[in-house]
Length: 142
Length: 421
Image 1 (spheres, chains in turn blue, yellow):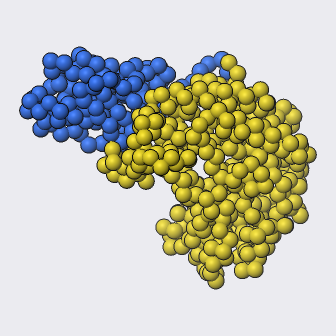
Image 2 (tube, rainbow over the protein chains, first blue to last red; image 1 turned 90 degrees about the horizontal axis):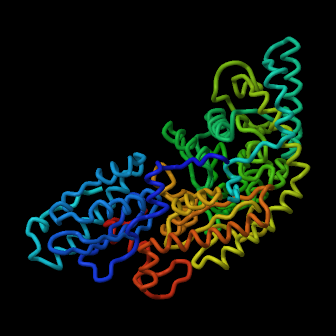
Image 3 (cartoon, chains in turn blue, purple; image 1 turned 60 degrees about the vertical axis):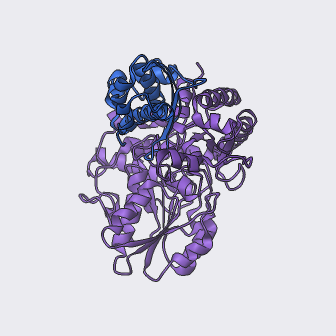
């Protein structure tokens, strides 16, 4: 075969083949692990937070190509953001940055958003004084 | 990059001699078999020859028992709905196995919405139909039993002779879906006492666009596609002559070469499974072990702690074409119903890959697949929180339990807030 056809667009495939920020963070300040009831995928995001800002992020994902690409992209996008900014993070940002996902795979980006918010909630739980605003924010259901 | 096609269950390439036989029927002998002039009569002859070739492949008495459809799905629809409607006055009950192909399952569901009832007979963890349950399921209102010969997902060979004996004793017609077996296993419709059998030549190096339905003269069916009086009034519509001619040649070649094809793929199946077992920890074969209960073309694998679509994509990027029964691969986000019916743990169903062999595969291909797949599994496990949690003793393996931690499925239910399906 001379041409290569791909199931996802080239950005998604690139993030799947060469994921960014894959792994765990030693001494993470917040860790969130969530699962998708719809398909059984599991995503974990670890955050390093300093002075109210996300310094570093890592992911581990049990899931399909778009789930891995979504978590790779989500960790790229949130690095450098303040906690407040990160709390208003939406899965649509992941979808847009990836150049779109097939409709049946949008839930993968929602899972990335949920994993990020679970990690932020974990941080707030560990640091109750961090910000009162964060503690009351609810994650968006799938 | 080496290219290894390991998805022969999806389709096979058309053999050059099959293609050669088809070519003149596109251009020169383009006639419609319903026409009464030379052009029609010539292709009518070709149709008859193809019917004889199909009949010979499955041990049917006469070419008059062979109907052509557009594909396996249409054949299954005609068999199920055609028999149900034809025998409506006798009763409105059907019996099928729980692991039939979607073309059978969904035809039955369609009928259930119209007042028919159906009993789905369970299978063993190896996927073999429970004969005692089958026998008990048949009632005086049962008008059809449908059991596939070989399972399309897990390669299980069903005990067709016993199934046929039960149906004969109860005097209920038996329909056998042979999509996954025709051309790769001997089929004898008379030994089974089958009323109907369906198969598709594109599974054994014939073209797509043609399906076959064998119907014993005594079995009653009505047409589900209405129009002209083609195919003895059982299937209206102009016959796809080039595909039918090619399918007939493919059937004749399949009958001749069946022993050598099996002799070629059986050792490759063994080599592949043994190699994967050796190189990939926590991998499981679903369905019977290679041997008399499993078709020689199929391996259905579950690799623990990683998901199937990722495996499929990485295989593809390495030139290896495979299929998967994982929920992430299906448009419905549901695991294969076959994996559900054999009671496979959800986590293992998620890590599912199906490899199906063909005559072009070589030992070198198999060794490349083993080596590449081991790297793919290691790469995906490196990304998987589940592998990490297994190594840290938070969750346990289903394939080889160590007695530590909770099950993957329990863990998945906890983090997703809902039990997995």
